[in-house]
Amino acid sequence: MPPPDRSGGPQPGANSLFFPAWPPQWPEITESILQAVHSGHWGRYRGEATEKLREKIVELIGGGHVRLVSSGSLGVELALRAAGVCPGDQVVLCGYDYPGNFRAIEILGARPLLVDADPSGFSVDPESLRQVSSDSVKAVVVSHLYGVPAKIRQLHEICDQNDWVLIEDACQTPGMHIDGRLAGAWGDVAVLSFGGSKPLTAGNGGAVLTNSDRIASKLNAHLDRPSDSTPMSELQAAALLPQLDRLDECNRIRWETYSAIVAGVDWTGQATSSCCVTESSTIYKAAFLSPRRDELIQRLRRSGLPVGPGYRSMHRSSDRRCEKSGPLDRCRQLGEQLCLLDHAALLSTGSLRSELVNLLSAAG
Ligand SMILES: *Cc1c(COP(=O)(O)O)cnc(C)c1O
Image (cartoon, rainbow, N blue to C red; front, top):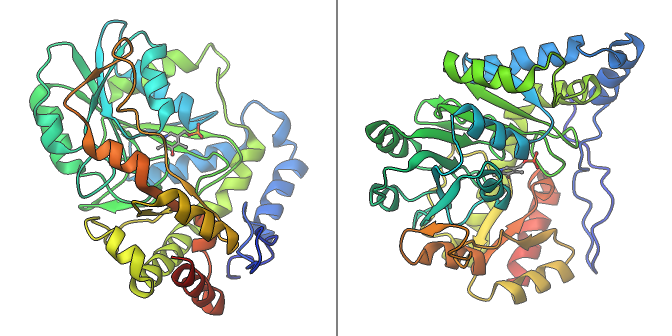
C-alpha cells in the first residue's frame, strides 16, 4: 500500500511545508472512479459502488440500516425527522456544536435547548444533560468533535431513562472506537459526513445509520418517492471506497502525529491538559485551547501552518430561538479559545512530522 500522497501544494507562509495532498490523490481513487465511468454505472440511479459503499458502512458499524444521502447536514435533519421530532418539540444539543445542527432543529419547527459542553471535552456534558427536565424534549443531538469521543455511554443511559431519542453525530469521526462500539453505533440514529473537510471525503455526501427498524422505515418513507430524493452519486461512492479501505491506516497516522505534537509542543500540552483523548480517539482536526487564540492563529499561519478557529459558540443565541440550561461557560470558552490544526497536516509522517512539531513549538 502506498503511503498517503505527499504532493500537496505548499501552504501559504514563509516556511512553507508540503503537507500531504487533500483531498487524497491516491491512484486507487482514480482507478475506482474510472471503473464507475467505464462500467456506465455513473449514469444509473443506482450502481455497484453506491451499493458496495453502503455494505461497507454496515460492516464498519457492525450491522443496522444505512442510507447514503447528499450531505451530513441533511443527514442530521433526516435523523431528526425519522426520530419523530415535530414542531413544538424540544431538542437538546450542546451550545458548542456544528451550527447546522441548531438550524436543522429550527427547520423542523422544533426548539433547540442548549446544554453546556463537557469540561474535559467538546461535547454534551452528562451533568448538564441530567439537569434537563422538560416534558417537551424529544431528542438529544450528540456530536463527537475533533476526534474526542463524547461521553456517549453515560449520555445513552440518560436518554434511555428519559425516553429521549439519541442522535449521534459522527460526521468527524468515522472508524472511532468508543467503549467497544464504533462511533455511529451508539445513537438510536447516527450520521456520517463525506463533505470536503472530512476525513472521508467525496466533496459532498453523508450517511444515516440506525439499528431501529421503525426509524429506518420512517427514513425510507422520507427518501423514497420512489426515486431517492437526496441521493449520493455513483462517482462519489467510487471516490469513497478506497478511502474507507484505508481509514484505519489514516486514523492511526493522524493519531501518531497528534501524539507527537502533544509530547513535543509545550503549549499544546498545557492547553489540552483536561482533554480526554486516548489511543482509540480518531483525531480529525487537532484541537488546542489558548486564551490568546487569535494571536496564536496569526503566528501559526505566518509559519505556513493550516490552522483556524473552531465554531462560534451558541451560548449567546437569542432567547427567541432557543432555551439554555445555565450560563454555558464551557461553550463560551471553547468558542473563544479553540484553535484547530487541519487534518491534512496530521497525515504528515517522518521528517515532515518532525518539522511540523518544530514549527508549532517555535510559533507557540
Ligand atoms: C461537517 C459536519 C456536519 C455536516 O456535514 P456536511 O456533510 O458538511 O453537511 C455535521 N456535523 C458535524 C459535527 C460536522 O463536522
